[in-house]
Length: 181
Image 1 (tube, one colour):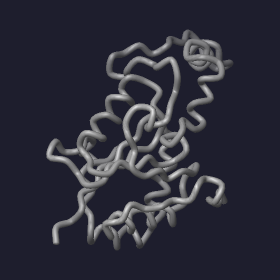
Image 2 (cartoon, helix red, strand yellow):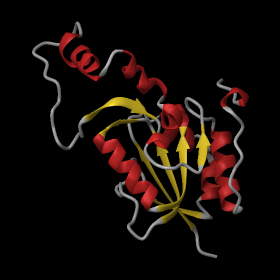
Image 3 (cartoon, one colour):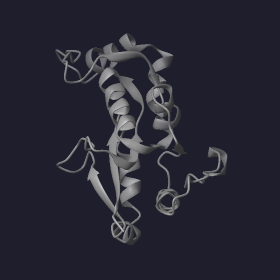
Image 4 (cartoon, helix red, strand yellow):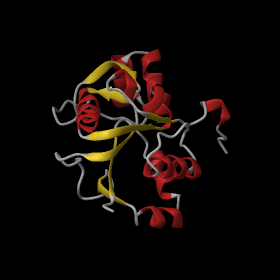
């Protein structure tokens, strides 16, 4: 039986969700007998193959045009899309920027902080343009599985991957049923 292909990527994120994925420890090794990770932000291969994957995993919020492009590319190249973490699910802490607005957040972060001297707001096409509102992934593309948490526990990752490998869409409890300890 061929291995299931998985691709991961992060959008506006802190990397906590990917660290939680790695916290599966020896269970990650067990999963690697059944899956091939084709691309991830922590490997040399960053982009999911054009030929597609079975499972695409996105962490992080959509806060700029580059994030939206990455989400659309992942959706177009995977059979099942999993939004991992509170940021990917509904915008999470990154969406706090919506409270003050993009321009005010950029001004404070790059020009007005106490430690900034001669700051400049980054302006590069490689970074993408900030969006007016930070959103979760489902505001940009359809999502098949949601795994909330900040970050989700390793046990929850293992459950989701085990269910997908068994050919089932995982039923994840609403966020209030998750433990955040």
